[in-house]
Length: 324
Image 1 (cartoon, rainbow, N blue to C red):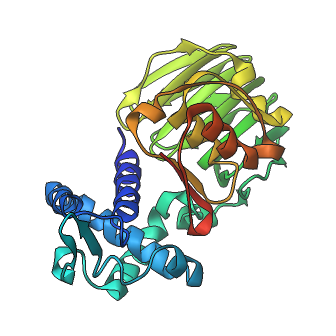
Image 2 (spheres, one colour; image 1 turned 180 degrees about the vertical axis):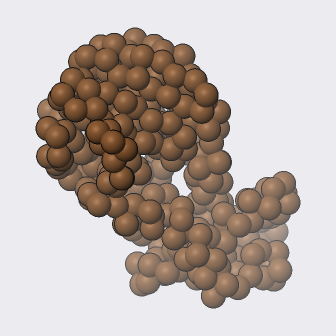
């Protein structure tokens, strides 16, 4: 798992604790378990500070959903009545939490709710739900998917170069050579069409037509049609066949899934809608999903998964929805 993946995992757990520790809901056992969770890893306590700071920063909506004082002095239920814990039992300091969240969010936006600094500095960028086609020099056409950022890089001789900072694009290069940088690797092609995607430190290239040379660290591989390779700071993965119709279905206005775990389906859907859907619980996250979901109707997916899997739905500020 990448460091970025660990960050998201801690954030999901922190939100689960915020829901569990609401006044009138938490028990003394919950508080004891929360203390144990915080002590397991310094990243746990930091994630809780950051998430609480985020909700406090969103203003009145956040205050209505989660009382700012509730996590400082939570009312704890027990069979013998209720009690209030001192703030030392929790992570104190709302102002400090908000400042910490703001600094952290400049590099790693909490739950991906807004673009990072590097994305905002891109030469071309698409917003959530937006798709865009860009024609570059030397007959290079880039079709950008949602939440995609691309930077122009200096050419090396006759080699044109761009960088995929984040997101996903289908690139069509004609006679001239093109290099697309992505994380720790790059794709080199001419007279070819390929899909390239970057999620944090992990990237993938799928050849749609022609040949694409993919290099990472000291290794390289040549892809032909309907094959994909994934790479990261750990190097190149194995080449595997893939259904290009699934990879590029977004160009036709829908997302296609075949026996895909719900947690992965939600991660993909989150790229196309404002806010965030979060799946809590490994058993629910592993439930397989088959189907086609139209991009114009993604607001319907929460109700569909609620009905299909009997999931409980909790709505939070900023368009965040928790399925549990």
